[in-house]
Amino acid sequence: MVDDDFANGWRIVSKGELQVEDLVEGVTEFLFNPAPCCCIYNPENDRHPYLVDKVKGAEADGVLFWYIKFCEPDAFDRPQLMGRLKEEDIPSATIDVELSMTTFDAVKTRINAFCEILEG
Image (tube, rainbow, N blue to C red; front, top):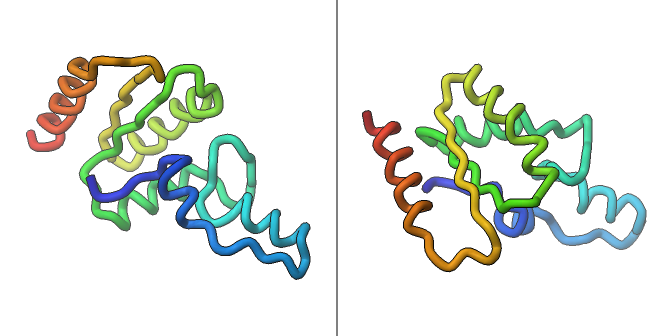
C-alpha cells in the first residue's frame, strides 16, 4: 500500500486548519478542499481526475476500493471511478465489507488474488 483515500484517513488529515476570520469561507474551504469526497459534490474538484493523479503520483500498481456495505455515495460513485481507471490502464478491484464482520478470510483471499494480478 502506497497511499489511501479513506474518508476517515487521508481526506481528514489532508484538511488544513479551519480558518475562522471569514467563517463561511473557512467552512467552505475546509469541506470542499483539498481531497474530494463522494458525499459532497464539487464540480471544481472532481474525484475522477483527482484519483487518477493520486494513483500516478504515488506510482501505485493498482487501486483497491474498500467498500463498506450501505455507504451509498461510495456505491454510486465507484463504477464511474473504476471505469475511469480502466481508461487509464490502472487495474482496480473492490473489497466489500460489513461493519458487523467477524472473520476476514474471504477479504484476505480477495486481496491476495488482486496482488497476484498486479504481479502477473
